[in-house]
Length: 427
Ligand SMILES: [Zn+2]
Image 1 (cartoon, rainbow, N blue to C red):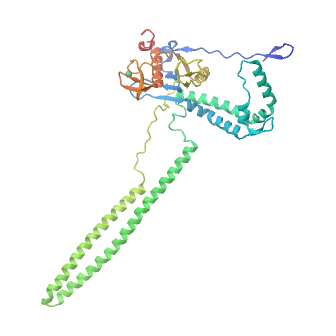
Image 2 (image 1 turned 120 degrees about the vertical axis):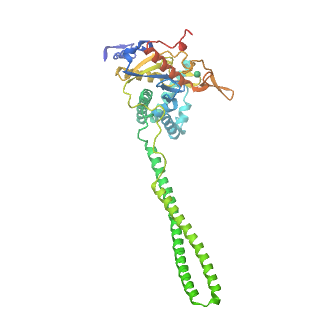
């Protein structure tokens, strides 16, 4: 590592180290691929590195459902944990009190914002800035101690994680699009709570039916007893009628008739109660039997196909190379180059192939009907992120369309047909 010499100008010392050369890689382009080298061994994915989304991948083109996968800038930041880390640091700065040189006790954030700027062309101002910084070095070092170093290494790990995760999502759907993935801890908890709530409600419903059932059965017992009493009374009345004299027969029969009517009415009531009982039994059984909902799960759009074992051949949009951290149309370009470098690393480990593809016109031309699309207009306002096709009358996400076109270009190149005419400069 040590190159063998030390340079000095009399004041400072320079130890000269050498660095290992970077492993060479070849940038492959879409025309480099041919059918017999690709067929059966690779599956093509079009990838549009992003403006608003870091990457958008399309696994095909067509008017049906084709899988596209996206990682937004917000998602990328969330994976790397940078937002939370920034918030935490901000909190820490606001709550850490330090003593300034003149004895005032202020939050560290105030102290830091009061430091004179280093971004200046004037040597005097710069000198003064450095002097102030050096004189308050102790305060700064008290805050930026070993904890901050730990946080910095965590941040670095987070960035690496974000890059790898994004690449996974782009190549095969990753965890994000795996529908059999285990739920997160939070989701597990929520699911448990929902389950408990459902059980509670179900028990309440069952209890209500049971109460009603008990009431009906009780009434039924009473009615049955009444019917029995009336039967006995009718029997007695008939006996009596046969015993008493002819003059009073009318009276006796009258009694019997009214009793008969009463009995019929009670009989009807019993029938009603019995029906109700059977109905309640049925609904109770239905409740106990559980949900009638269909037990199937919809396939997630863009789920990774677990049967596909072929290596991904990524048609990587080459327009954004080395334009990292610039702003286009007000959106940060995201970490496209980091993703590309990571993919190239994977290519060296034979895990994928990156085929650079010219982005020319890919977001302008409809991936289905090849007509040129203007920006979509919503409420009289042009929307940059959406395109509307005048021929097939649909509004599509600009990046999704671009990645579909990227797929198309790679697919036709592999078939030996070259770039589609509609996406070529000759048009
Ligand atoms: Zn169209």
